[in-house]
Image 1 (tube, helix red, strand yellow):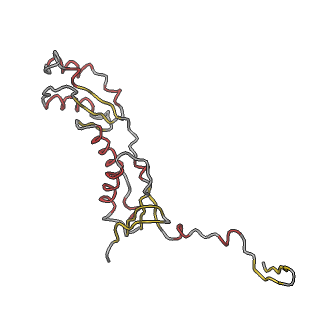
Image 2 (cartoon, rainbow, N blue to C red; image 1 turned 30 degrees about the vertical axis):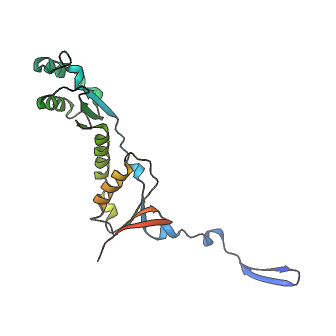
Image 3 (tube, rainbow, N blue to C red; image 1 turned 135 degrees about the vertical axis):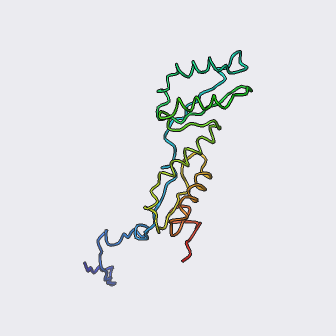
Length: 187
């Protein structure tokens, strides 16, 4: 729409454009895929089984008593949880004890481990990353958002980089308006 406006003896000619014509989302047009690490935050609760509670006189694990505990244990409380199996005392736990607990948790718990809570959390992050459909990112330009609330962000970024590099055209860090180039596929 063409308009003329007068300011005293000065005549201005200009064309009015609609609001939608003036705003162009260049980020959307760029074909960039933005990825928020917060979406990879593990959703499974971490539960702990402390084997020190099963030690005879706080010292050793008696196989017969331990097998009775395994048999009577209500394993369903660990449904879909990540279970950390530890011994909070300085006792030597035989390998078969971990195997028996693993057998009890199998098919019930989401996952289980005898590492630390930090390592189990990292494993859960790795498992979330492995759920990503790589076809979505095949030959694409991907930005990993820098301000994400996720435990162990450096670990998550490193694992995500390892996972995406084989398929993406380019990988960047930051926000669409300000990125740090990380990787660009050579032709």
